Image (tube, rainbow, N blue to C red; front, side):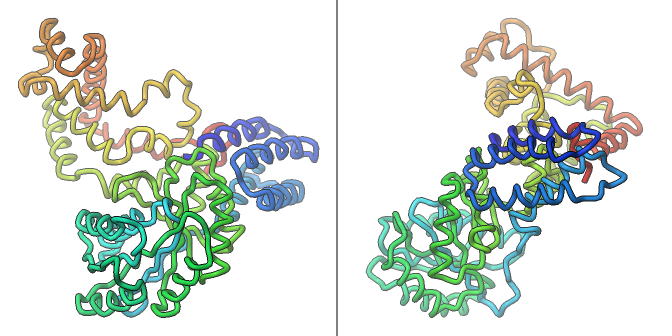
Length: 455
């Protein structure tokens, strides 16, 4: 996510982080590169201008902290200004109103609005422990109602039926009554999108907002449209009373223009990021964490929270007991670890949240490709249960059979077995007295890349 912006900013800031003194000349040189990086990331020009002016004023007028050298202080100023531009702090949904709390979803067609409704329903159900009802007031797009019904079933939300021959306002008012009967905590109303902003669309959604008086009106926008996302959000904000923005498809956005422009242009907070196609791929938006990721400092907090939610604790405890009892880490265990990693978005998603991971050599990054781990899983699946439990029995003829069954080559099988042996050795060390504590101390002591301030 935001790879292009992250690469360019970290490269620029590495150049100034070792400076013993901040001068107008070296600050201006660095800011020229920062300005170009932001413009190439499709950040809106007024936002770029304000950002650069603020950083320059603070960099040349600041008192240098004793804990940081001047170059590091400059990086901290850039980090803090990124946070400020994106909204200072997480702005959570207001769920304190009398139930059902009504959330109205708005956005253009194709932005991922209906999918976001389902993701939000799952988020509220699993993390906020709310009973959620959903309804579609989109009577124009073919199969829109059926799509939401299918998604509601997947995320265990109560689906309130509607038909294409009903008026959107009638659907919404009936949905509120039914949500009350069902004792739903939250009602999410999906509205019709258009291919462009038009008055008919705005008039319809305005009437829905006036009638429903929703606690939250969220605008869903495609993050990959860059500063256009911020401009579209502003157009909606002028017609409606928006309470927040959801950036959908943020995982596919290599630039970051939308995330850095929306708050500044609309004055409305980004509340969530859509980070993939799965129904659990919705993250609360934390400006400080995202700024850290953009500058290569990682986001260990989000990684830990994700692990707590998505790692199968029963399997993890079972493996821990097995290892501490001196039993070997076999290929069945290795397969489970690959699955757990996939549940957390894959190795690329995890690396994105680790400090300094973006500065790995290209060769090392290539070896940590998600496709490689998927291929490993297929190779293990092509083995017999006996081979997975006792990898040492895998001889030349078995390797040929496994390679043929998995559509790979014998060197791929050899590579997998070698990596498994390395994992086995690591697990053996962890199982020794104090091994786990040493490993945890090592993780806690992880440093950001050179020149990046500790947080």
